[in-house]
Image (cartoon, rainbow, N blue to C red; front, side, top):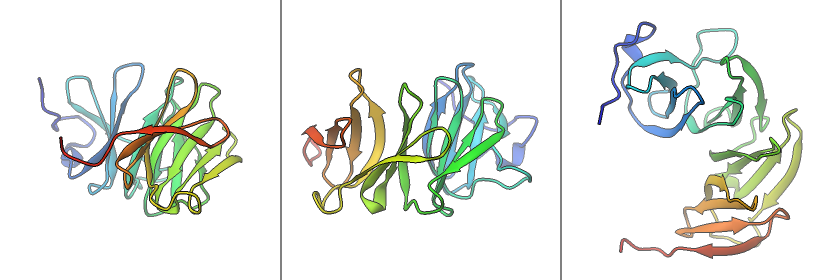
Length: 193
């Protein structure tokens, strides 16, 4: 058991976490943490030592309000950001590659990368899931605004069949969505028991 804390050589002042909301690990064991209220993505060692901050291109500018964060199998890092309404992609060397969403995402709370490298983004407050290719072109939109008024997609993951699993916060359930964007099944109910 250990506690994540400061002491890293690059950014000791920014080692505290105010409101961590996303976490993932790359193939080297480095831990990426999206700190929403702290306005940063902190990279920790496996022992909890601060290594560095993930920065936006061309400056010392940080990601203002990170939400979701995922590291894919090639160690690319994807971070959604609440203020700009975009998802930022960085390569394995933490160099900025591109954005997804064109500033139109409203609280993108989930990101998942499928085996074919398509990027799935839960555009939570717009009640939809958007699918992009690696070039940034939107391929699909699964829009649930008309068909399911109480659907608020957040966390995303894929099962072994390739179906999308979605944490539906308003529905207090997990929803399984097939490749066509249709809800196949759901489970879970509201309650603390």
